[in-house]
Length: 117
Ligand SMILES: [Zn+2]
Image (cartoon, rainbow, N blue to C red; front, side, top):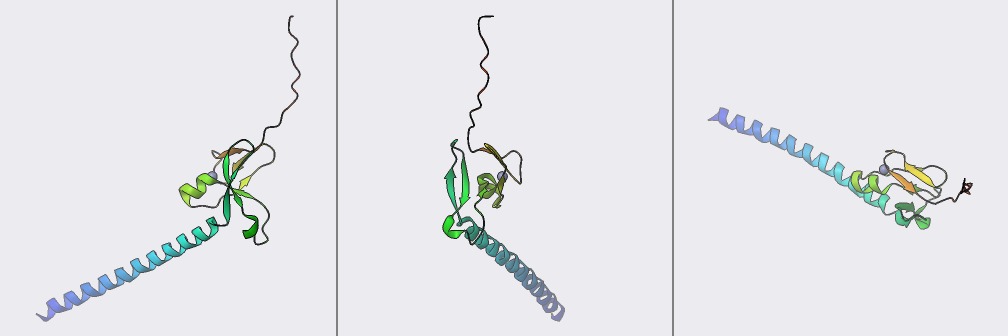
């Protein structure tokens, strides 16, 4: 009788520990989610000159940070704020070189090949 009670108490104890562990994990995840949402709200959708969609830091939420763009793929898929870097017409995500964005189109004056010979 008593040993059964002891076992049950132990089980209850273990479950209690497991429960509070789960709660800890949950609240950590909630906090991360919250911070992510906060971070995400600092950005607005931006259409590049070549109709690529990226996220751009909002001027009113910059908090002294320099103007920059972040990758929409990483943001939406991985909940990750990943900067877009590069100079010129083509820029890419710092996390994945697969995420490339066209910002502009520079028209080079290609020498036109003579025809007729
Ligand atoms: Zn990316």
